Image (cartoon, rainbow, N blue to C red; front, top):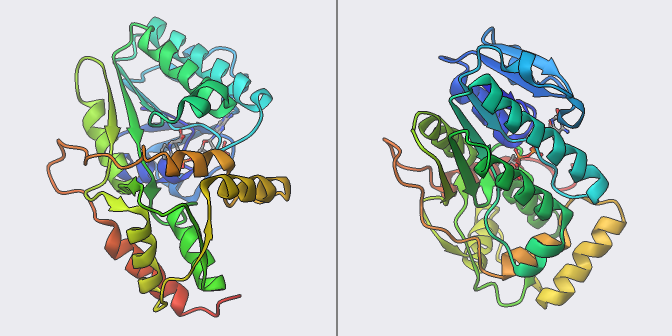
Amino acid sequence: MLLVGGGGGLAGRALVQEFAGDWDIRSVHRTLAPEESAASVEWVPADVATVPHWGPMLDGVDVVVNVAWYRSGPDRRFRPLAEGLSRLISDCRTAGVRRFVHISVPVATDHIESTLPYMLRKRQVDAALIASGVDFSIVRPTMLFGPQDKLLTVMLRTMRRWHRFPMFGDGSYHVSPIAVRDLARIVRREAGLDGSRTLTAGGPRTWGYRELTDFMFGTLGLSPHYFQLSARAGERLARWLEILGSTLLYPYEVEWLVSDRLGFPPYEGLATPLEPVEPFLRGEGMRLRSHRPNG
Ligand SMILES: NC(=O)c1ccc[n+]([C@@H]2O[C@H](COP(=O)([O-])OP(=O)(O)OC[C@H]3O[C@@H](n4cnc5c(N)ncnc54)[C@H](OP(=O)(O)O)[C@@H]3O)[C@@H](O)[C@H]2O)c1
């Protein structure tokens, strides 16, 4: 397997853990991760944007899995990455790679889909794969959770620290968080299929957003307290955070969340049930409670 985006990120780490026991992995990204010390993992230090020819890296490769992407930034960041991935897709066809599993993102608002480099370039890569002639699965997971994730874990930390949390609008929109370990199991299943498909992947339960944040406060032994913001004010807050250099929240994430497009049905087809989010949140909540709030 060629794992592009490697074992350093949230999804990449889970993929290495899922596959290292019975697959040989060639993992392409810039910073070696501890998970990649397994004998079955060959780390190739490279920036995807600057690989001119993928042929040598595809030697002996049956399946390519791509997780490389950025969470935000200008087009000058996304364009070279999208071009590098498009070269990879084209070289996969030449090399006779059996299947390409690409982690993409769900459909967002028209505004995000038509203006944001993050999304426009993602769709460019999706389209290159669909047109390539290589068999593929394009997997569009909703919010991922797992150790050191940058969404639920960060939200819990914020609640623990401030005993308050921003609520955008009435919080009645939906989310269906999926475990990153389950995403890795989905990739394993998709890697073994024939033909091509694009699918969304939700976790086992669809939550009202506020229902989820109330539950999260509970795992910290706190009553839910919110500072109420309109969706617009939430986007403005996120814009200020971004200007100040924070990676906590981006304006498009607020827009996407309140647009109520992130509550999908569960992925179907795995041999054992999807992991519920509650035990993960309880565990993280306990961990945070055992530390000093500002420590
Ligand atoms: N997290 C979520 O909730 C979520 C939800 C839906 C979809 N997704 C999608 O799932 C995928 C993985 O997300 P994630 O949360 O695991 O992201 P992540 O933690 O930021 O990891 C992305 C990895 O991609 C690598 N990468 C980025 N640019 C690269 C480049 N130019 N060359 C080589 N490697 C590069 C980085 O490794 P190095 O820095 O070591 O190079 C990084 O470890 C992304 O496509 C994302 O859009 C995520």
